Length: 272
Image (cartoon, rainbow, N blue to C red; front, side, top):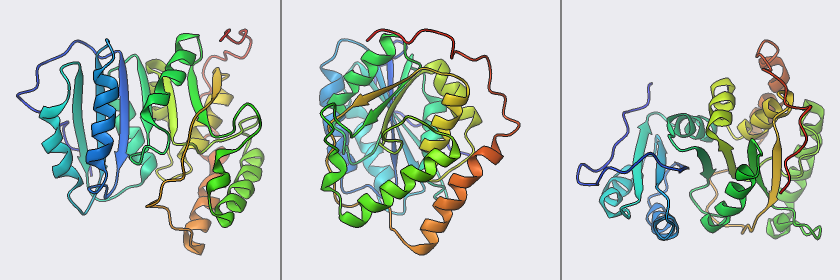
């Protein structure tokens, strides 16, 4: 089913083309989306540039959509809030794709609705894009080797390690943390990668990185703060594990005919 037209408050003043876009996928987030928008608005509203925030309601069965609609008119003058909504629920990958393709900013960042990585960390990723990288991905592995995922339950850490091994088999190499839900792209890169994306589930991050490395795009891995926030929508079941395995192993096959595009691999990495 096609996504609905963006909703924004008719009372909200028009702003110039946003410098940055922030995309937030949301599924049954009525209990925290208000707090999330409070924090995002406070941070972006204090900055001098224009921004847009795009919340993608991924077929929620609760009051997520109504909560976001009520929030639209409360955004600061330099921030435009848009709501994209579709039914039924199609998965995080589909929601992020819709939001990033709708984004108008010169830089496009997506973040989880729980703000496990604080929105204030966005400046680190934007700085990497400004330095010449095509995409900047948050990593929970710190420069001193500490892994902020250590706060997760043991079974989640072991599953993460197994997933990382499988990611290497798919062909994504040298990426410490493929699944951190905090990534930023230049607008051109966002268009290029999300138009090619096919997976709608949680493996979409790995698919994007596979496509980026295949095209020789410049990827910055940026250490970010991260907290293990409760209330995750991910439930580890045998069925879910098999879906993840199927999607992960299908990435190379899905993109046998996807043009890699002009390679940038010969370029010198930008200085940071």
